[in-house]
Amino acid sequence: MKKILAIQHIRCETLGTIAEALAARQIRVDWVRTFEEQAVPDRLDAYHGLVVMGGPMSVYDRDRHPFLRDEIRLIEEALKGEIPVLGVCLGSQLLAAALGAPVTPGGRKEIGWYRVDLTPEGRNDPLWAGLEPSFTAYHWHGDIFTLPAGTVSLASSDQTSHQAFRYGRSAYGVLFHMEVTETMIRDMVDTFREELRQAELDGARIVEQAGRHLPRLRKIGGTVFSRWAARV
Image (cartoon, rainbow, N blue to C red; front, side):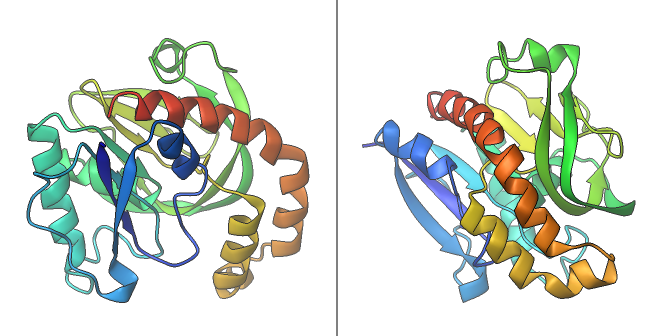
């Protein structure tokens, strides 16, 4: 049985529907939960893929969170070995950093439901081909990245130029969230309620809007994650 390593930084940001796509292909998941002080391994010899999830920390907080250095090193190893990588939110920022791109604070936080537009390259990408070229996605990030050299930009939003990118055949960074369930959204709103207060955003409204946007987003995400899992 093939297996992947998944890195989780905070309890509320799980694999979500990514787990369903992996299970459908009988791919086993081993976890590193940094919020439980589990160590990031030195190598990926036993794994066929790497998934790095989101979290409230920033890539440039490596002095405060040394495990981020270990994750960047592990991503670099995966890229050298052409092991499929999927980075979500913070994971996409770590992938960008591993490829040499700067990760910096954005002008303002992008939290809630906002449209994402696929680029022409995104519309022809093996994971995204045939999907809707524009859709409403769930966002929760304050940092942005420059498009890494040698990568292909796949998606943007009105606020953020680079929402998704591909490196090589099977390394993908996705800044927005397609993996979320309603439970995850509720948990994030509860966990980060102080951040919402500071940003003057209504968490109840974000949860309410999930009823309208989540079914369509889950369908798109299910296709993308299934196609990525096929590359593992």
